[in-house]
Figure 1 (cartoon, rainbow, N blue to C red):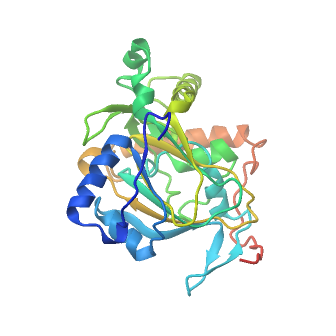
Figure 2 (figure 1 turned 60 degrees about the vertical axis):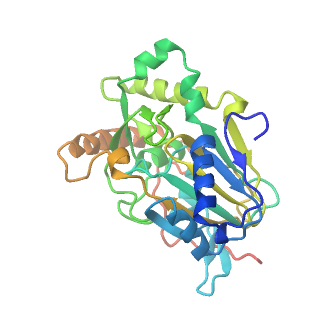
Length: 325
């Protein structure tokens, strides 16, 4: 990518037909550049799944990540209301994050394929946490070397939007009441390169006060995205496919006119347990995460009434709006 420290566009390839040798070149480029854009692929759901499986076991594949309801025949219809939990989740994704850090095993990679895109807005932005870490001064590197933070999507929805989802409802039961402790500095399991491992889901650094923790995490995130060379924003065209390394990059969606269609097909590659496992809910250390999350949510209930959803819970029955597509 021109004037960027990461990312590349891959052309002259048909992903649905690649041979093993071509995939090895793609995988090596993925590890080097952090994310790859493949224009004009128009992958089917099954082709998205098959390509994702080349990287490893999937968390999910060929899933519609859309503001529209997908019909049984594969077409799209109604636009979801902004008060539904689905749209609250999509709006939450407009803050910098890394996928699945709120699960026992965080993810390896994410893929998006563009099906329908708005005329303006709706980009996907990425930020390089490898370059961000490398640019830190030595005092900061020393300070954060042994620190960790809890990760929870219930925390991030409340903190960013004032949204308090019902436990276990929607999006694959990601609202489970657990919080997983992960190091702030991560060593990439395949490249050996160190990077920051932060984002909207991170909170509550053990050993620091709440104010110190929030200030440090916010400051690190702002530092990563402060240099334009470390940030890339992709303007989608129908048929584009993009894959990025969740172990090294942050990403976020960008706002758009939510009354217009934005349909992406999502596939997520599961992380390897030997490098991405925090712990399981049944493990002894999990209780500390539950306690930290419960305490934080109690405080946020009092603090975030001025945010978009005003410390409310979504109405599951919120109506969808009809739109011509």
